[in-house]
Amino acid sequence: MIAVLDVLRTAGRLLWRHWPVLLAWYAAGVLGRYVVIEAAGFVGAYNAVAGSLLLPLAVLSRLVALVAMLLVVRDGMRRLDGIAPLPEDAATRRRQFSDALLAGILPFFAFYAAWGFLREDAAAYSARALEVSAGLNYAAIVEETDPVGDGLAGALILTPVTFAIVVVAFTLRWVLKRYRERLPRWFAVIAAYLEAVWVYFAALVLSVVIDSVTGWVQTRQGMVWLDDLRVTVSAAFVPLAWVWEGIEWFIGEAGGIILLPLAWLTIAGVVYGQAVAPDPVPADSLGGEVGVRLRSRYRALPARLRARLRDIWADLVSRFTPIGDAIVLMWRAGPVLICGFVLLYTVLLAVQGWAEWGLLRLVGPHDLNDFWLVFDQAIFLVVPLLIEPVRIALVAGGYDAVIGRLVSRRAAVAASSEPTPAGASGAADESG
Image (tube, rainbow, N blue to C red):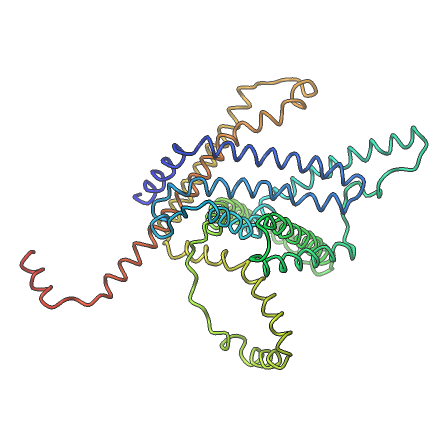
């Protein structure tokens, strides 16, 4: 209960001090996403590859707004400020913003895709591209000219060009990271875009591969037999089918309720960059005999090739290290605090659902063509505009409480490890 009240106090203080700026940043992110999707759909009607190269900017605009919102409330997080004070000069703050943005791209894309937001962006982009493509085809029919565009209407398929985009974007991003100290500051914008491009296209390739493998597995005869067996068992033992469906429902609902707030805490940990790294495992102890053989072959390679491979591997690992550190930090904070934060986040989700229900009842029934198709976007944006500042304040408050719990445990361990001065026990007995 104390942990829940602590999170609430911090979140309330942050929201009271910063809600206008949080609201402005969220609105800017939504507007940026809308503009990018409209522009990408227009370009995608002419060339699917060019349109898909613009689409990651939609996710990046939301990420820029999220990072800005988390950093806006940074000065009110007292426990985090106690171990990592805010820098005084503006140049260092800009550097921290770009570092947080680059570190947050991979986990934010994973979060964005897992909760269906990436699918929504792709659907909006496809709808816009189809609309523009239909207009171009109609104009070509009327004017009796050849159709304009590649004929894909924005749909991107796996080709050698797709894989080349991933390789080129990742290579250029690695080069910019390697020589970032020699480059002007505005190259950070290009680095962020390249990071978003290679992550987006890699996710696209991975999703297509997974869908292909899943479709192939589901069409195998063995899966058909297993499905028939499940239907037969369910028909013969109806209570068992009820239990199984109940377990599936519970896992689905509990997974969403628990994983969503933990994902937000993880993103906050990556952005703030103050997670506790786990103790490193010696490299020579990994892999057993196979690992020993692989390391011996690796050491036999030329020194220059080993240096390049080591740089590439370090660049890949550095993207996942902040995520692992944030997870370790939450684990060490203890289950009481994390469960309290999950409870508060669940209450916020319930309030959001009630607010959306109440807004629809307040607006009332109207004509579909004359009202909802015109004002639906503005109406459905009202509740997120009110909820998102509260969500960011709650996440920042939860992360600050996690940092406070970690600092308290470190202080307790340090106090217990200090030697007791001579005569201290006697003085303590007399004072007692």
